[in-house]
Length: 366
Image 1 (cartoon, rainbow, N blue to C red):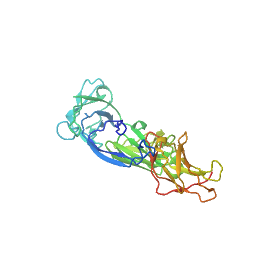
Image 2: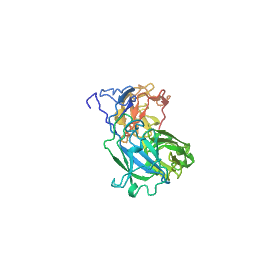
Image 3: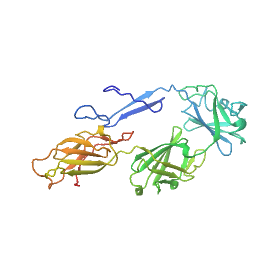
Image 4: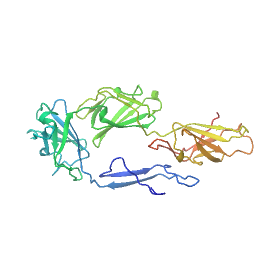
């Protein structure tokens, strides 16, 4: 980065889609004395798909009649390289030897938004996942943009399909009462009665299938209070989710979530710290640590007072506003409203933003 130019590096490659880049209000502060913050900004851009697809999983159902093959992205289902062509698939031993064509009468259907296929065998194959049926060899199929797999033959080990904690990722606390997580397969049913958050029955649990995975959203009841991302405990009893292959989930437990919850203001306390009967500080306490560099002397308005400076506590949970004292005693008068007027970020890696308030709240005394 230079003083006004930044390069963003994504955790995974962006590929073959239209993306939106958004910058929330108050995320970046300039180097001036006033510490001016940016206004909200959003733009869209397209990226060509140039990355070769890969085969990511091969799973078979308990009755040994269906094989689910997963790819890294949406694939083509027509023409040369189509994932629906049975000629691109061979069963083989663990070393790739003894390859054999799929049995006559096998059918293949797209799955998970064309990022997978369901191979339905005409009858059960005993010993799938072992011996001469330990692997599936996938030929040089193509993604939706026409990119072929890097290899002519792509072996993938076959394993029994499951739905366990290993299928879950990206658990997020997205609001004070809501968790989301991804399941790396599509779902066709969910049973909210088998979900709990911090030991309390979930208020709701829903899912949305998209892009080869399911996004599950779980809402906590009021008894949980505000979710603590560091300690929140999500539990799903056996059978809480059912995959599109009709596989019921095993019992699943998950502790902790990525913090996507914006901080809140807990209190605004005005004080006379030098005991001269004049208000001289307001301490604003937050629900979690805030990023010190996102706070400036003009982040807050205190009705009728000038804020001369601010100080963030060492643990980041409070901000002290240093007020210019009045000429005469004022501690017996009406307490002023204190209002956040510029966005502040929390100290989490996500830099969640507490937005400016539309109105102030009256300060209290210690």
